[in-house]
Image 1 (tube, rainbow, N blue to C red):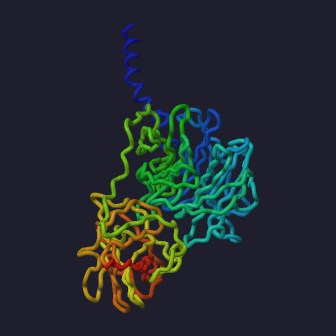
Image 2: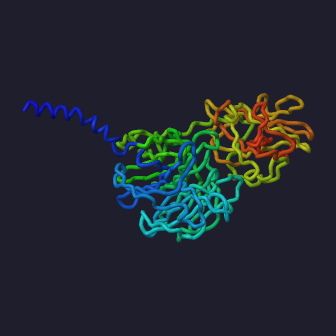
Length: 532
């Protein structure tokens, strides 16, 4: 008996080591370990979750090499069955490569697969196709024989704006499609799910980069997206909420920071599946048995618990190695509100987010650096640009006298003002060396907004008259390196009568040419005569 007890005791001691040698617990991250996968898109069908991913096949220092979409399925989100390839870019006869982000949605018993691909030379650039199947695992076939959206559908100054589609079928049967980098586009889909139904809208959300995901919970609409890349950071996850798909969208802040070793991040949400919500994303933490390690083009899907507070706001999520292998620990209380931006100087009225993605200045400005801000000023420039700056400046010389009433900027993004991020509006007469707005500029409070109109109304400020032929410098002063706000700048010298600079360094575009900020000056309205 004693030798048997000894052997049993030894076996008990060895079991933890054997379990460790067998691999991580089911539900640990990275979630899928048989190959590199990215851009997860979950779909719930009954008691099963189907997961569609792009297959990362980059070698060495390749950026992205993606030739197919793979599918997996699970009934508990911990144990996954691999189903192999379900679609390739070349299954669209008009496409040539790039199995970028995709999503599958169900309608009337059919499954519609919206994808990003590279179009052939007949319509160069990124495009969105749609394939259809009668089963979530296919076979999927091109539903149109042509791209649903291509570069000529959404003219813009950006090179690959038609990527990362997310589709959503509302409770009333209305279907929607959203996509884009770095502009978020939104359009209705016809009931056949293969044609757009009406005009394409541009939705301005703070710090938006790419990878939108539409969801709905308890009557509230959510737009989750990858953010901050165009502000010079690795992507993070942000979200906004709205009472309807047409908005108004309220920015709710960041819910996840940068992914481990991956410049990109891409969200896929599953709400209330068997009583729990989840966030799919990716990082680059996986090393395959053959020694290939994760990198920008070798990413791996992750899964973590997602929690909401009583108001429907999302608690911040941290990608963990444990993933969902351990029981969830729901936070208590409410998600902290966004930081208070503070208060503006009473001599200036700050007006935010009018006409997102401006294509023309409203009204009749007395002076403007560009005519079409969206097309002519696509670059986001902030206090963290080129090693950091504390002063974003645009000089100008008015051709005629201007009794100044309002200053308008094409601006947005950033984290806004607060205790550690101040912002002052300055207007300096360079020739005289004097400040025209108070003694040291005006303190302004700024809430994060998408790209759009930011206006400073000076009706309550003592009169300011700009003289023809004199040189002036309009500036926003802030904390060096802070992510407070981003002005939109031109590519090339768009404004001949002035120049932009960061502190004392002239602003240059990527080709080394002078660049300008998009701004406009408006004359003051006639002031009523004082009673005698």
